[in-house]
Length: 418
Image (cartoon, rainbow, N blue to C red; front, side, top):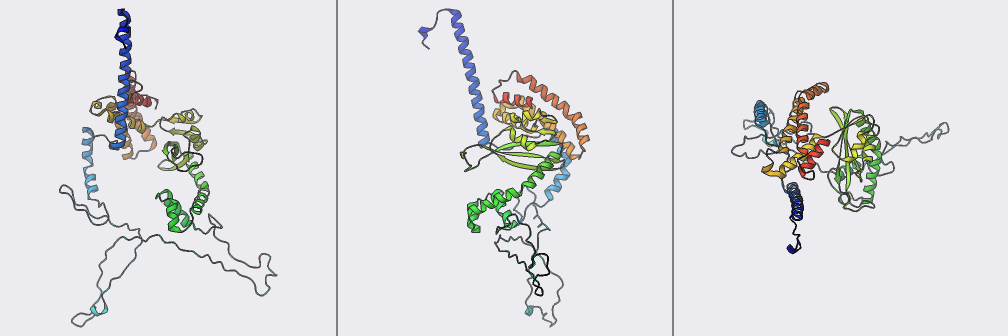
């Protein structure tokens, strides 16, 4: 701005100064938000992943009652193989026993016959044995199973008197791929190796000497064969009183009509009989509410999710009550406190995390006492509701004075909606 172009009128100059001050304040706020986002990104990439908070004095006092249990835990053997050399301040830990359910193969190491005689001339008698066990592994091996089905016919009448086939043989056992050369065991091996052990088909192709296209075809047939099982899992999820749902990004390579950098999603639903939940993983490219609606079907009960907007429409459906997730709320306040550093101690995020920690203490108490559902409801009404009321009051008091676009402002808004 050219100083000569400024007006001489004091009132106009005051207006310009006020506009500049407001613009500078907006810029400072924007810079602060960018710096906060940068600190958060640095923490995500380089910082510790744990969300644990230091224990309070009360929690440390409560832990004194668990000293006996801790002593027992310390005495439990921890690892297979030779015990590690302990540090000067550590108690020596023993070797974990080999699980009794593993199959045993016995190898007898006996004395040669020439050494089974005593110098006095008497033959030595076996009075016992020394046994030592060592872990071994048998690598996977490929073998061919020949299914032999004897055929029978009548040599006397040559089948003239028979009402059915003149040659009889037993039917083959049911197969996932009836005309294929693969057994269910090999199918399971290929699927587990690819999806659980991260062993791609091109590497399995070398091991099995079977083309990648054939392996891919096998996996497709297995997926189709699993459809009845998937339907049973969904039905079991719908049978319970509550369904927990979440979705996470997953990158898929060489997907038809989609770039390798496109975001896809793995949807997860958990529900079923309380205490015996089942979990469904379903891949779907878009992050649309229609996917959640498809998984839920005609389910009636409680649906617990994060604050993603696509779930909100489901909460309006008759017979379905939408619940928030305190774990997601807590994670966002942890991020705020981490980015604030020492300045965050004693702030809104710190106070919110303390209250959320007390909520989790109530849940731990219910779990430790193994309370029944109606007893848990009573405990929550007595202890958790007052804590939730304090948390809501804290957020309501801070929401107006916190910039809505700041990390704390977004977190407070998210928590209130939840």
